Image (cartoon, rainbow, N blue to C red; front, top):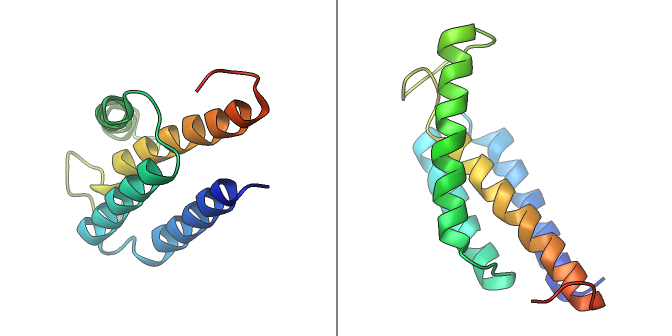
Length: 115
């Protein structure tokens, strides 16, 4: 396991802990997730990273707002934006970039795909 993999996994675990501890402070949590995304970008950048990040954030917000408001599948105890907190779309965007970066970092090292 390379130092990049260890750093990415540690970053993910720390962020997961922040999600569990800070769900009652959505703006702070969204800021921490954004800082984690910047750190992830420094560790394992991907092509068009910020396009991916903002695209996934917008799409996940639209999907989650639709699911929460139209289907009433679930509700949040402290919604801020059309029935959802601020942090879930940012978290989904981080997870998308994390997954792509982790995949590319591992397969680029093995020579299976190009950087």
